[in-house]
Image (cartoon, rainbow, N blue to C red; front, side, top):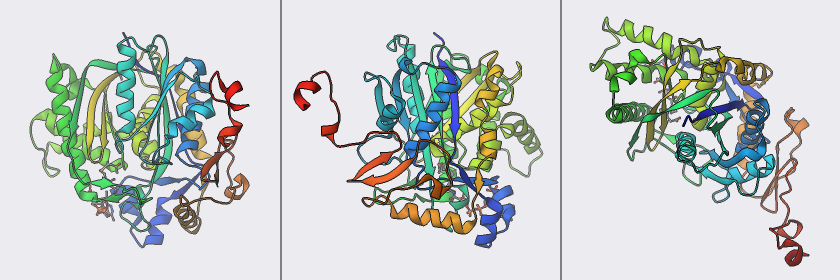
Length: 429
Ligand code: CAA
């Protein structure tokens, strides 16, 4: 059975910061951010845009743009590391906002940036083993990446959500059923304690952990393949990676190339020219959206995939590798194939018009948003107004009342006002 991605969509917050402005404010050479990290802009979520609103907006786009019946969704998973509650999953708000059927299997997954990829593997297995019974899975990768103001991680911040429909009608991309390599190791490279709104990170060590995990997952994938030669780099027309910042994908491709070549290739050596050429062909072209959005944690790999899918892939571009990394850490390497004719969906997929319509923030405005966001999460709030935050989206977070999160159009009232199950008429009235 063929299983893969039938629909995909991205939703970004409506504002951004120019990284040259951030560099100037921090007294840093802008080239460090734009060339050294490869980042140009970072998406900034206002207090009315949280993981739930990003996820709902992305999911609606995926279902509407690809004309998918909401009743066909039998599994809904939100992968996130910036959830809004220690107990209640983001997914259940998304379920209500979309009006999905009550017997939809709904939950949240967490493993740093690997959370959504883990859900994609589960959805793939659910369909491939025949339990989906014709239903489709909606997987949403939604996150807001936050580091302290002035932290080395600050220029890699971002926010956004990618929603994907996984089904047995993979009009965009089909997963290879034979290989997927995994790697797990307990490391303290990046973490966010329950009491903190921002991540703690050992930046340079996290890069090392990422690259070690890539080696481990790739070795496992090749070990599992009956004919490993089919998955060698010369068979791959594109290699996409988890993208915490664009330059990390270049480091990842360098390591992937070295493992494939079976030798270490120093940047100073002549052979490094081959690494550069390979990167320019197979990875570099699909990093332009990540560079203007920033790190979106669980969704970063899939944003790079959107970049690839929106660029009218030719028939020659077919077999791709996908590397997912979640700090802490877990990783996977798998192979997928672009579906012939997927270029007819280019327009539905392309988020660039919406990204171009974002409004630029000054550094003062951005810092004010960070301060207000930090003060949230400690109890009830005032009711937020879209006009005060210059927002056009219809689905927004309105603030907390009686410790309950309120969203536009969602009825998050007390139990007495709601109906529960077939016996509700006799038990609640
Ligand atoms: N012009 C051009 N390039 C410059 C420059 C200049 N003026 N100044 C510095 N550079 C280059 C440096 O040479 C370096 O490039 P290389 O890595 O190729 O050598 C690059 O810019 C970054 O410079 P530094 O290493 O000095 O930067 P830093 O120490 O201030 O911070 C960072 C970099 C550690 C990545 C930091 O941004 C960070 O902590 N980020 C968050 C953690 C992260 O993203 N880790 C990635 C792996 S973990 C993961 O993937 C999970 C996840 O999503 C978080």
